[in-house]
Length: 204
Image (cartoon, rainbow, N blue to C red):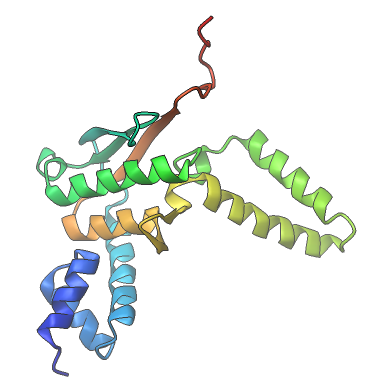
């Protein structure tokens, strides 16, 4: 099937994938750009999975101060080499994530970071909300509500504010496939003027 170069260019600009990968995905998708994007995402997940165990000890710490200087973010993102840490694509990813954190206000990087006590507290609330339903139904409802909770408070599971059709994890995965290195969102902190930070001592 002959693929219009304009479609290839549009898909490349949208995903950051290589020209040949975009062309092949469009051929597999019969010229459907939305389907081709899904194909590239699936391939990206496979590539990322192979690289996930590789050490990521380089990277950068980035800051973002929102307009008005009343909200700020510090973020550490790691990669494997200093070469990629200086790559424009990597820097764009880091910038995207800092701005997302400012807008979406996550509490944790990933679900594994959520304290067990917090998870159990959420489960108790959900069970109380549906206590009159049959036991098997309660557990299914609780599980569903817990997934929604993770998507609200965990950075990697939140819908990306610039493209809500994908999550931050999807965005990172696509960049792993593009740059060929493991990328790890390590930690972040978000400050808002006047907001009390857990563990800190407010000024007198």
